[in-house]
Length: 553
Image (cartoon, rainbow, N blue to C red; front, side):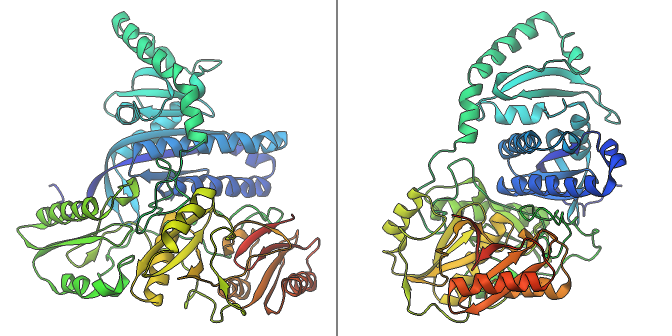
């Protein structure tokens, strides 16, 4: 009997696996596991930056889903490039190589996990991929043609283990290059009819000619989109946005290599699927402005078949009292996406609406956005006040500064500018300071997968910028790469919203020192260094000042 309660949807699955990890682990298990954690965390970060969600850790690999096949391929390309870059500076015994498979197909939701044929095919495609390569199904290939200028090698129909039908597969060839030695699976492609080979050869030649341009495009994104309400001003390129992150936030005390403070800890695997779905609570719906709360509550109170669709800007639509759940789902998504088309001048991939609830059960596959602890900002503002000036704000690209000067400074609404990981910035107006702070932090945390910082509310700056060291990124507790006890983890959470000058020092053995509420930057850094040494840390160095990651000038 068919289970009508199954939640099915179309998605893109990326399967990643480390090659020959058991051999490395046999040499030095503890070191190998630490290296694996750091590398998989880097891969998870790139998944999130391309609006993906890691839904399962597989020991020496991971499974991720993407709304867009294009973004899945881009993430795979950058993951392999990041792995090659890391290997270039690593010792011979620290070389990790990956195989990646990507498939577009139907999946079944099981809590945070995904199951079904689409997942199995992606895993099998990974198994026939070149070491350091990417293998995709024809369903993915059809979606990226004309969008990504990459070389491809047609592998023909592949008979994959435990897959009852043949899968047409392609190998991506970065810069149009062919492999030095053919994978055994490639020989199958040579048995195709001659006419088909001629046609594919011509198509491949065109793709190869565009490969260099495509690689340049991937590595040098186009200029950011023009500013609009709830639009990133400088962090997102037109076709390479950081959005729809669905990876669970990493606990700040998660273990990672103690000697590598730059490496974030590995993402925690999702919890086991729960038999009881989360109940819909109006106040817990993210992104929506407070003045729309009554409409959200009306959905909770409605009876009959109903659904609630939501996008990252807080645009939502409800469908109530429908014939059945299928009609409610369809109507809610259609109405929500129509609102997006009306209200958003330039619609991006991350603007697509998603089902948040069906009946009074939350079906949204993402967890609550990572946030600083309440009240989300320091209780005291800098004295004397600092007037917001886009020209001097840290971590902004020049185009972002121009747009903030043209739009943020001239807005008449209550607004807040938040800064996030990897030079991400976002602002959107609302009716009150409290609401604008919450919404912007939720949006930024959801898109980046890490807690963000409120840099300014209206025209007043809330945090000081370091002067003695160079700002490199936004600090988050997971940037501390050592195992922390509960007291240290809480201290780092509290640090995110501490007053006045503050600093974090990190030692080579993972010990930390924290200073906050200091009168000057020099006082904060010296106190943090002393606290680090008092904790038994050798070679203590400042890793954060205020909410910013820092490095020597």
